[in-house]
Length: 67
Image (cartoon, rainbow, N blue to C red; front, side):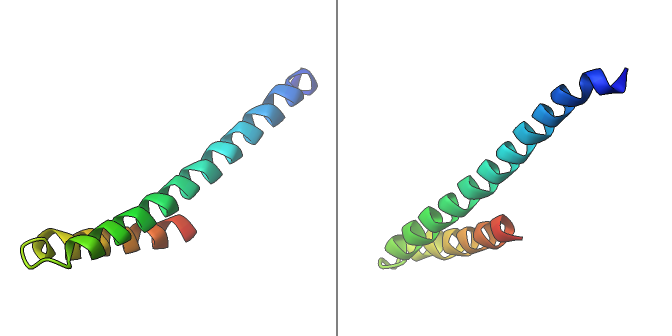
């Protein structure tokens, strides 16, 4: 009976792998965006209050996306 479900199990594992890779890619891209936005905000004195933590959060997202 398990042999009948093998194509469905393989398809489910393929979809799971694609979603996992896409999620990591989105985390890395958002991390880069947050770093750039944090650097731009840090150019002003008032924006540095928000920009520095935003850049740190972006760096952490990139690290999490790679590992």
